[in-house]
Image (cartoon, rainbow, N blue to C red; front, side):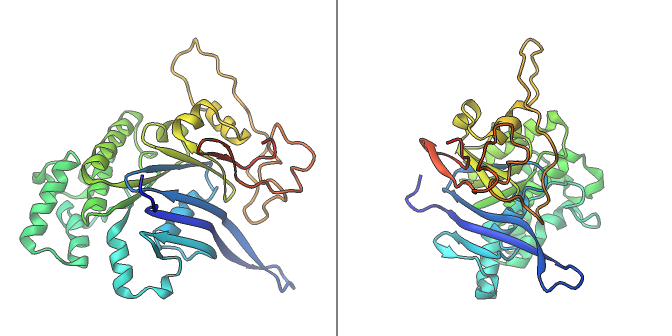
Length: 325
């Protein structure tokens, strides 16, 4: 691990205005991300998990400089990139080259009117630095690396399966030699048998190209096989973070315990005690006072609804935000 992290996120907040109530001067907000801190070292994979609507994708968009943070600081390679307006066009373009994304939906993320060659050629033309011959050779090289044939370059997205389309998305993300790739639910739209192939491909590419990953998912079973560390988010906040082995063998937060209990087990002889959470996820417009999880927590006690817990150490590199600890 390097002394200075590749990415350092401190107290990140992303609040979206949603207008005012009638006759009210107070503006309302959706508190999508409400104060999270994360680090990512070079060559490391960080998994971010949580239910839909917890803010994990918005956090990824903020890191990619696609969404302006309301507050907090994002440092990439030692440079503050929190405010897009303070970056020059050249700096923003260079940042786009170093940070790429793999989208969730392999169908809508590809231009249906462009061939495979055109899809992979566009990023290299925009950023420059490649001759037409070099771009052609690199496209063939990337297609082979993701398990496709260069002869398929003239075909269009509708001629490929879902798994093949996601391989195209991975090749596009690699086209500019990035150092950080954010995968926004990169396998959730694929069949289970194809998911394992894509995860193994990502692991192979990480080793070969010395990549760092942030993998966003709602399925803890998916990130288990690819992550070095995992951060669990709930309603805009990180409630637990730990090395993957520690999190799966010794989860501390009641929310993490409930998520792990929901992972299906193939062996019918294993009887897993399923933790059923009551109620629905509260609205990010009106997050609860105190601990955001307390309305659904099976282990809440007096004070949970009044005092907000902070992330604190409960072991080696293991942190949890819960009054139980």
